[in-house]
Amino acid sequence: MNTIIKIFFTTVFVLLLSYLLHGVAVTGWMAALLVALVLGLLNIFVKPILVLFTLPATILTLGLFLLVINAIIIMLCDTLVPGFAVNSFWSALLFSIVLSFCQSLVSGMSDREKS
Image 1 (cartoon, rainbow, N blue to C red):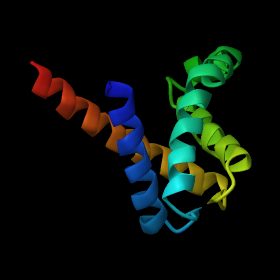
Image 2: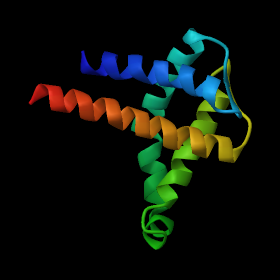
Image 3: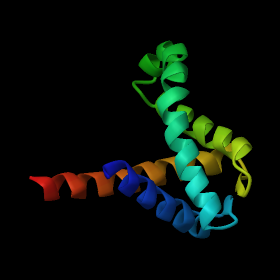
Image 4: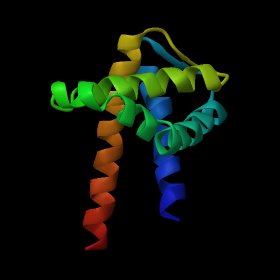
């Protein structure tokens, strides 16, 4: 049940961010749901491989290169999901930062309610 709630909130955040950010576009709520699902799968399967291959750069930048990896994941999702478009790397970077922040807020609130 927790996974369904996370997917729901990610879908809502993708829709909201597409309206708020200039370089991101989503055609509708089905595309946003597909973005949420694909982002979840990419974060499970592709992101660990990217982190492993770029470990020296991540260590050298004290972890800031993980932001670049998140932007790459967003751009990869752009190519995989019809109805989702990101104009530039910088738009993907800003989208990934704000989306991660929103997701961590919801996760923190749900963890606080459990205790």
